[in-house]
Length: 115
Length: 115
DNA sequence: AAATTCCTTCGTAAAACAACGAACAATAAA
DNA sequence: TTTATTGTTCGTTGTTTTACGAAGGAATTT
Image 1: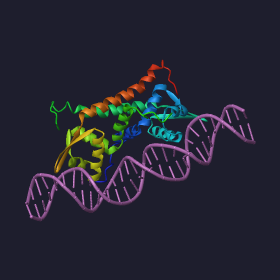
Image 2: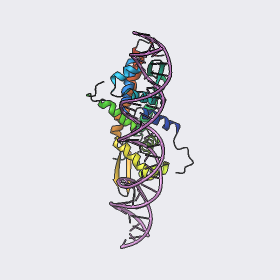
Image 3: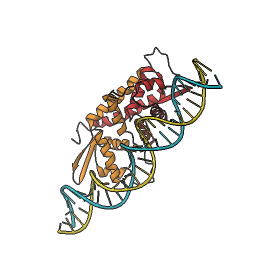
């Protein structure tokens, strides 16, 4: 392939970005905590997670940069919550990604290729 | 939190593993190619992707280690295809992950917390 | 004003990732 | 047997990630 192309589609980049954010177990745990409690202070999360405070801040930044959470800073406390809008986007994009892939299983006239 | 705990659940680890594999746009592209064509030789993928052959091998290894694809080596050719079984697992685990999270939006008596 | 609480940022070190070309199998073709 | 073809593995380089403690900022409490 030539190098003049724009490498990857926006969608592929978007999927990778969301996936990357989910690509560490502690970030999955963070999202689950936020989802179950709607909101949490940094300290609440820190109590539940086996990582240093500064490390937690880093992971929260990753999630925020990916758009999956948002933080309301209110010194000295900071409240985090899920960004539901982007969460829905992520949910859909993953669903469609897997749906498209699995579809092909059925669009090949029942022939299971690549045994 | 004490350090005696087993850090993360199997499920959290599993999600992170799958997500990690999806965490690079070229790997998303690879999966899409495999999904649309059912199977591909390494060379077919190489023609479509803007990376060196050796790099492609690395990415394929990541996807294989995560269980998302499988490779049938038949020198000098190698045929790759999606591991549909694990793919279905991944699809479900992501779906349930997002479903659980978004559910809370409705289980809070319509009160949108954390504006 | 000093001390405390809460969290972020900084500095740093170790590990993992991503990319490439070169070298290396393993078969097929000449 | 030599040459090609096809991929993987190796070695290397540079970047990113993950982790921590220390230091810093911002309000609140003492």
